[in-house]
Length: 107
Image (cartoon, rainbow, N blue to C red):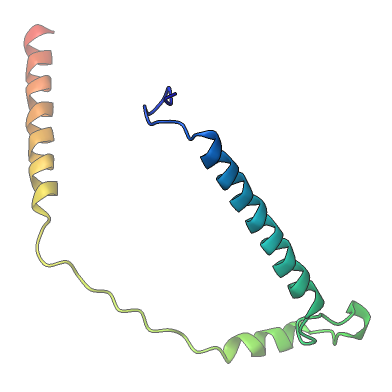
């Protein structure tokens, strides 16, 4: 038996049983990991109820934003023109010019 799309041999029953067992094992491992993560919650990751949070005024928000330092961005110019772009532009210009000349000639 071969795949209709790519032509590779389809797996035999032994291989499919092995693959199904591997997938089932991976699923059970993932469930165990999820259960462990659910059990061990970081106390700092749990958010406080909305009623107990301090209300941030617009002034405090602006002050908080001012303290962040701007990051320096380095702009590196490319060295010289990109020759592929120059050649493609020239070819397209010539083709356009020829089309305009033919249009004027044949009206």
